[in-house]
Length: 243
Length: 221
Image (tube, rainbow over all chains, first blue to last red; front, top):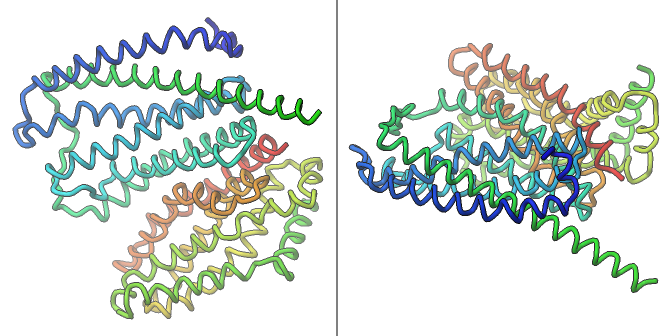
């Protein structure tokens, strides 16, 4: 189905009604399989059982970046193609992406306490994800600042695009900053050469979380459309009462 | 060109005359520097060490303070609609307004930096360096702030929101500004980070007006 057909909210709602349970079931199955396989995988020789956090933490990290990218693409849809559902998709991506980004930070922090001995270090990757979370919060507060969803959508789209251009610069500067300040005491694994017994559960679990993201994103879009319709009905009702 | 210089001169006049609020940024900067010793103690070696960082954070916050004024008063009295209608590209108008705002609020911060640095015990030889990094970095902050100012032009309470939107994105300028100062203190070799600072600042000088013009076109009614 071409993307333009979805401009009709009813068609989108019908499609979403099919896809949300589908992606939800897929997510439940894949996350279940991935986590069971993950728990059966051998413990890490250094971290022991704590390495199991990886099977949820890493998908959250990937999804926070993927959701930001999706938000930027949706922003292009709002500004360039003026697709009526693009800003709905952008808002849903911001909401779910911010939640996943937060979960990434929390699980990472809980993982860091036993393995690194601290809840937080100013490591480049942690710092970049934290800044990404701040950018998400900025977009979400801009959404809340307008009462008209159309204007809010265009404002958030411009901010999302500017932020998307900025993310690589922020990432680069944080890496540079860290190369100067990073204390040598914190043990970090570099790019881990991951064993297949851990890699496959991770990939299956990640696929499951991507399906979960798709389900949550579509559900958030559906809710936003219903919210807007309720808003329109309220305004019409108010106008009727006045007349 | 005439129209643009007219905009710059007009905005400068508005900012410098009564009610313009150009001086508040400098006073805020001074106040911020004064309250830091109360928080960390009058420990001169410590202040010397964190002095450049305090100056940068102070200048950053002070530049964010007046952002709301760039477009909102023009929005209120309708002159923004006139600017949107005029034949000069909106991107250039936004750049001219950014330049005027920087001249009125950013440049004074750079000028008072050496004085405030003395109060924080920053080495006299480094004072010039800090001021130089701020001279290179604050235009980037102002022009990045143009985007937030344009987004919040039509909002009654956009001030705090602008700061929330701009601060995370200005981290690169802060990093390279402070790092080039520290590099100058350590071994006098500040060229590499300083060039990055200039590059990022120039990048925002281009990105800011383009995004701000898009925001003015799309977001206002």
